[in-house]
Length: 375
Image (tube, rainbow, N blue to C red; front, top):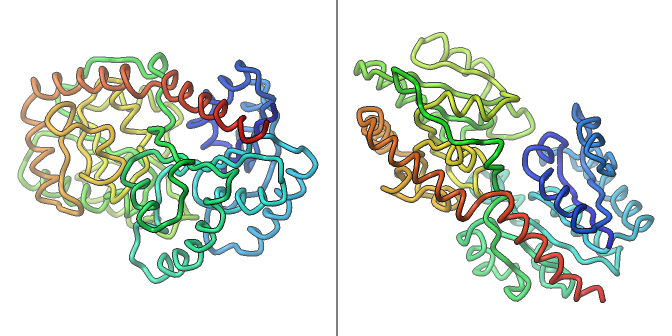
């Protein structure tokens, strides 16, 4: 049984899908990854994984490259004849689903990792993209051999309301899971609480609101350290300019660590993990922080509320509301016992519901179901 997994970038594959592919190989699937190879080709091949390079671009401003990649995918699928094509995230879903039309004996599994800029933004650019891709999705996703995975029920319900999916071929699998052995529970040893936001440096991750809270906390002499972790994503229209990030740092109320290749240690160095995002699928960083045993603060929006149980393992705050975010951070900064109890609950939620073992088993079970479409 040939399984092809289509992911936009090699770094994203390693951080989010490596364990799934290794589980699929162990289960007997002849598995190939199609991705843009950048720095991690050898790391992928060292795991014994077949890999094909396609120069994907996540930006919506590269139509000629996208057309070339679509043709390349069609050629790959015609030559390799995969039984299952598993597309991950919006751009590769669009390209992989269209290319899948030319691979008649394949089953297409589309995994939305969140609806992102295209569905969450009210900018004209995003509205235009939505206008064009919705009828394409409607035509594709209702075909008998197309399945859809959602990471949260809000996204699934939205696509249901828009009439884009066949509900009988749609399933909820909550994220890509987290390795509870790599992200082990640890104690917070900080003498001064460290409040961390770890993500790509995008406006729609709520970074502007987080910075305003850090500025206010500094002004009010709240004893806490505020840290941003993550790189600049120049391919995303919501990217925060480097000049603005450097300006914030120069003003002295927060630190910016940039990209980290060691997230277990980075998250373990925090006391509170915060993600005031505008919309998510199911954010990996919150899963990882929960596994380490940290209290979480996130916006009460799709995706975030899948992992943050308000009052149990963290606090849900209002969307784009600096006052709400400030109040939640101030409460946890001032209450060590609450941080500890919420952190322990975070770990238990991951162990019982959201580990990679649990999520991978659910995905492999879906592969077994879709085999019936092939046989």
